[in-house]
Every structure is written in C-alpha cells, then in structure tokens.
Amino acid sequence: EPEVTQTPSHQVTQMGQEVILRCVPISNHLYFYWYRQILGQKVEFLVSFYNNEISEKSEIFDDQFSVERPDGSNFTLKIRSTKLEDSAMYFCASSERSYGYTFGSGTRLTVV
Amino acid sequence: GESVGLHLPTLSVQEGDNSIINCAYSNSASDYFIWYKQESGKGPQFIIDIRSNMDKRQGQRVTVLLNKTVKHLSLQIAATQPGDSAVYFCAEKGGGGSNYKLTFGKGTLLTVNP
Image 1: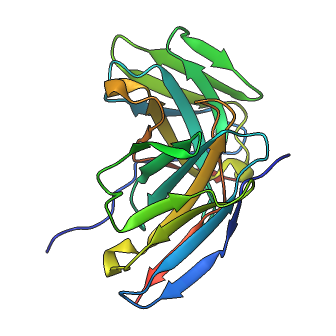
Image 2: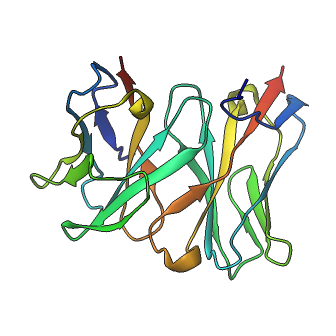
C-alpha cells in the first residue's frame, strides 16, 4: 500500500536554529498538508498546498514557517528560528483529491 | 498550576465485544468526516470516512454513523481485538469556507482487554 514517508523520524535542534522537515507524499497525490501534534494534545492543521501554492493555512503557520515542493517528489516544512513551543510531532499528509488523506508516521521535533 | 494536555475519554472493552466510540463535532457546515486510529508514536491511520449526505457507512468490522441533527458521529467496531487498542480521533472538514483543513477532535483511548 502506498505510504507517505517522512524524514527524519526524530530531530533535535537548539532554540533559534532553522529546521527542515521532509516528506515524500504518495506519487499520484495532488494535495499536500502539514499538521502538528503537541504531546498529549489534538492534531492541529498547519497548512495545505495545491498546485504549487498554499491553499490554506492556520494561525499557527506564521512567518516563521514556510513550505516548498522543491522537485516532483518532496514536500518540505521549514521553521526559520525554532522556539521551545515548536516541539511537537509534525505530520505530513497527502491526498489525491480534497479528501481521503494519508498521513505519514511523523517527525518528532525537540527544541532544546 | 495550569494543566496541560488533554484528559482523553477512555473506553475499556473485553476482546470480542463490540465497541462504540462517540464524537461531537462543532460545525454544522462540515460536509466530510473521517475516523482515524493513532497508535503510540505513529501517525493517524485512516479507518473510515463518510460524507454529510449519508447517515451510515460500513467497512470491514467498522461502521460509522452520522447524525447531523445533533452533530454527532460514532464509530462502531465489531468483535474488538487487542490490536484495536489505540487512540481514535474523529475529524471534520468543510465548515466555515474551508476546503482543505481537517479539524480533529480530542480523541478516545480504546483499551481492549484479552
């Protein structure tokens, strides 16, 4: 069964550093998403991406965050200057249409 | 002090019993609903979905019921197995002019006792 692949599985970074989280969506999918889950809390929407542009974003997705699809297979989330409160599981998801999402296994980001 | 995190509703069942997990959603304009299963340290795994023009949908051992009148969604798992132990989330989409964003509920922890 096709999977969404995320790397790394765990990233530790110092506060103020930039991090890039990487995702390889399912190959025929057209819609891409990032969500995050702070430990013990709900999964929260960050951003959706379609046709090479952001289609929707949440209040969490401020100027510190950016997304990119640098080639035909990768989808990245960049956090420019990490804060302690950015520590969370970050999930990438993709879908063929605007429903039927498949999530990756996540990247655990720890900011120290 | 301030509490952090959520106190998850929990459901404990015996292996072989049927489980019913409930979810109240917030937006009457939502038109698409999904149930996800999340095991510890893993991403949400799709179980079953339903559109707002349906009341019931069945999958393998799972049934989703949608009651739009009271904004209630339920997931029924037949013959629950130990491997079904996980946190179950409902998610809704489509309310408030949003076409892409899934809004997740807080989850229910299902524990299946052998």
